[in-house]
Length: 320
Ligand SMILES: [Zn+2]
Image (cartoon, rainbow, N blue to C red):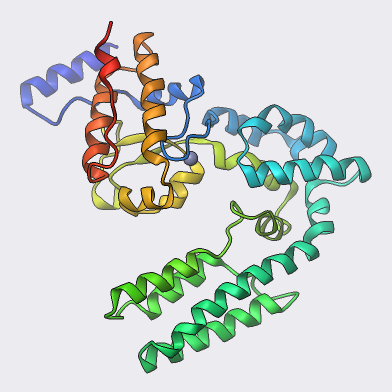
């Protein structure tokens, strides 16, 4: 507290930026109170609890032992991860001595086929654009698609398919395309390629290559609470609570550096979820756990960055 008052005085004297409403420690403390994610509305896990789980060696051992450790966190798992966890629970009865990696490898072939089916239908749609792209781009797209098909149709590819790299290469090929709406259409189709967080088959295929303890942690990682930079760091966003929102690591990672209106497009319930978070923060402020200034600043920043789509009602904050 002493530190804080010194900072305030300094700011008053020098006329610096507005005072930082909450320290990182104070902000992190909010994760102790079942805060829902600003974007998806799901409950988040305190990052320190996740850190302590990272030290549990049993997660790399028999599935039945790992399941016991993870069971208390089943409720906060995201849908795909929870489905995989339930699959592990069923399989562990049949194969009591196997670990998560071995269990995933039993299922891998079936899930890989399912994944390739989804991927190839999307690749077909992307390939269609060869007909309307300028010749050079069409040739580059053909090359990329041949290489990609080689990877996904090979049961043991030299390098596994990476959705992220594919989209990156695709964007690069069409970066100078003048027709913006075609450009957006192509990327939109490519974004439908399943991620491990969207489809059980993609989770199984991606994680079957990983160590058992990593697979175990990946089941809960999407729910870990993070500080989201509302204005991205790369756009000179501040690195303190004037620019931080509490978001699960899944939403934080999926946003990349996109502006908030795009994040809302992908998550149409974000404005309602942001209000639910704000209501929770207001309730905590009445108990002296969160301060008014943080909530007021969050309202203001979200309002402008979302182009007025997120208009939080914080009137309860002023009712005693
Ligand atoms: Zn979220």
